[in-house]
Length: 132
Image 1 (cartoon, rainbow, N blue to C red):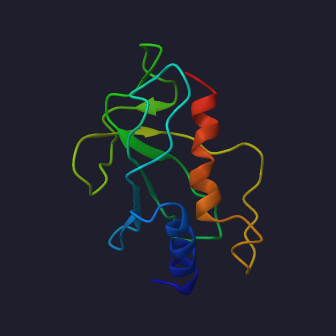
Image 2: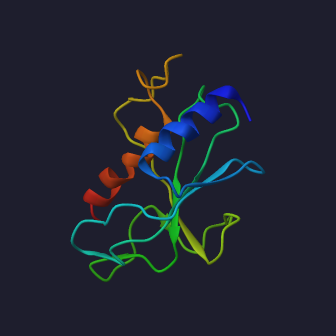
């Protein structure tokens, strides 16, 4: 594991002490992600994402949720269930094809000063606020 990834995992564990990391594939499981806004079912579930092979040179892309998610009773857009690739954690998973459109992925040597995996993961709430 690179020093950068170790530092970012440490930063993420300040928010999610129960975070799980699998070095084989560079998977991150957030078992207790904040509740989703009204309209989403279930309102809470685990979230998984994968660190890009060239991290931090390219922005992360997409995230996984436990299968069965809906927004106001409908399948969300830009969502595939089951996901083509299943994360190495128990249960079936669906995949949100998503990245923020704000061009905010600007990593710096100081992980707290620039883009980092913590901010990326917190940004999933933006996708949920978009609705379906």
